[in-house]
Image 1 (spheres, rainbow, N blue to C red):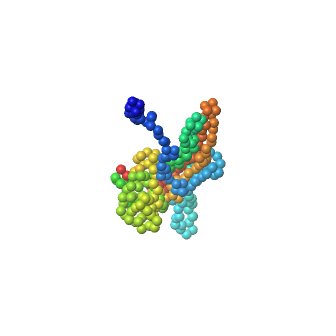
Image 2: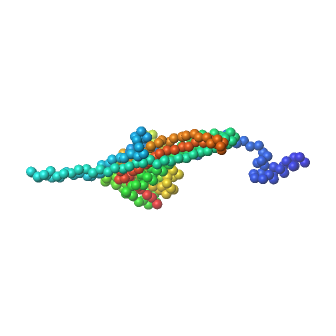
Length: 287
């Protein structure tokens, strides 16, 4: 009878049958999310750190391209006056922040160090936010677009390179979304050319090397402004494309709330991203 009674309990429990009675073991390691593909700071033409921004903003002076001219001067004639033009851009960093508050009970009872875990994940979120800002506040300033079809083609890429060269810039890098990266991997010409490069593992691990001398950088769709950006590519001259001003690096401050029996951290950053020379950027879109 006792055995039958126990069997009934195991088979009629609420939720997952028997789950409240059978012993469980919870895996002691927290499986974290994977890291996303982000854009490295080496791609920016200019970076201004806190020491270089004495006030709340910084001005960057730019010479206007193709101003100033040389003319034929006749014998005894007055030499004509000419000069180059200049413009200025102001970069004013914007404050970004996030805070985590955790009760003392939760910190005491949790299997994991929740404060440390949240801190690590939020650090990634700040890096992802920087990639988003690079795309929407700089690369999207491209004045010229190349419109492709269902997949990017070599003709699309060379057209974008030509647009940069017509404005006297050099195509140094191509930044691509996930779907464009797939298109590149499906190009026989691109794959065969990169097979010959020493150390290139495109066929084994999906690494994208160079195309027409440009380095290929992929950004995660989940760090882009929207899923549409998976279909976008940007050909840039990294020496002139965009700049970053960071008045405050990622800063972490601990705090306690004794009245609520809580502890937490506040994470802040003051950052701005702007295009430097918009004609050093060309957007390629696919359907």
